[in-house]
Length: 59
Image (cartoon, rainbow, N blue to C red; front, side, top):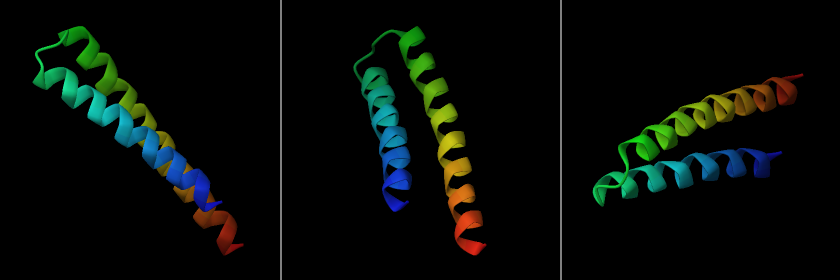
């Protein structure tokens, strides 16, 4: 189950770095906005996954 958490966190990190890199090189503002929206969605998903795993391990 820990690999699922690692995968979710890696996805968040990758999208965050992509968004920051795009902003630093003065890329498209629309692309940066889309990447940050994806980051927020992936963060939510990562939190849900962590909470579900904690809940299942506690049972």
